[in-house]
Image 1: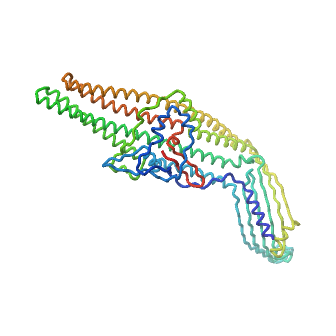
Image 2: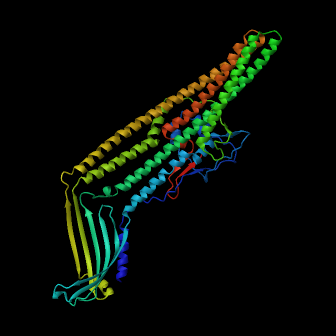
Image 3: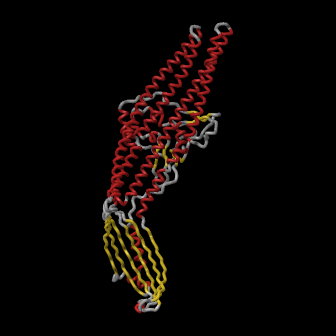
Length: 570
């Protein structure tokens, strides 16, 4: 019966240890998972490029749209690569998918949330009860100093055995329940019963009344750890958005580099054709030698420009390879990435209400603001704890002990539950530090830190507003630049056609045609640069709003039953 009662009591007390909401074990890595797509290898339209570009003016609706659902995600699924000679065509979506799965910066940042979640579980474990077991054997032999010892030589053998549970209460107190057995055998004739068993069931409680008291103070490590976890998740989103934006910027740089190579190559072919015509006319005596020299100089210059453009293309391809870090696209391999997408043909106009909607979306979604809010909350928790630590130490301690004594071990245990032999005590302990300067200084430091966190939050909000304003204005400027550069390219094409007609009719100099062809090549590159800047501006605006991941149908899932995951797909 004694054993059964002890087991029940231990079970009840162990259930009293409070623990907060459980946080499931975090995985050691982040998986890149995406929704089902069409047939492998097929180029799918990207929701973040063409379709989203036509809805640029309606930023509020795009920012408020629900997160996309992922029907049966495939971990790490990407379109297969198809090499065409030394060229590897790839879509922006394919680049983003590979970057999410392989980018080293993303892979490093993905460890942050699981590490922080492990710290939360570590903090929550403070309320887990502890089982203890103590076992001690001892023997004493000494000369009796008095006939009252009951023997000339006093010999005693003692065995102490104790076990129980102890733990921390949510309000700051500590509790302990212990069962102690003592077996004593002595040579004294006056010691009865001999040998004897002493059983003690002890319950003790110690609780602070001032310093260290209260749920808020006791649970502060858990609250701080959870805020650290929210900060780490926000940091992961920041790094993820920066990686996505970097991939998009480099991809459109690749498009510009390809356009430059194509435009200069066309200008080179035109210059070579002009050189052929100039040589023929010189041989026929219709033109001077200087015309041939001008044509040769133009062709040679175009060849040099083409070498530089091809170098830029290869370097941009390598930068994109570095970002996506795909094992199928090693940097050492000479294959050059070829962009399989072009910017939108007609950029949507940027309207004034777009700025207001973008600001509202940024205040709600920017992870930097969420981080600042969490750090301010941490400073508030630390200030509350530091203020509590200034109080005097006043502790209430109480204990209750049931005893049983017998020559038989089982009888001693049973007698302790008869409650005839007991002792209890209540104690107050007071400790007041003189001056209390250390804790007062710690509280002052925590107050200043909290005030600093308030200013930091405001500074972050101001920076977010500036980012959004710059992004909207840059997008508006890019939209205007596209239209202007397109008109300039069309005008340059008309100039080339007119000069070709004049040269054929003998009414103009070949030099004017060569200059017009060069200007046309430059105009084509400038137009593509403006279009690429517009596409980057779209992504930069989404980054400024904190919605770049949703814009590309990417979600960071805090899956408490498994590892962190990146869900959805561009």
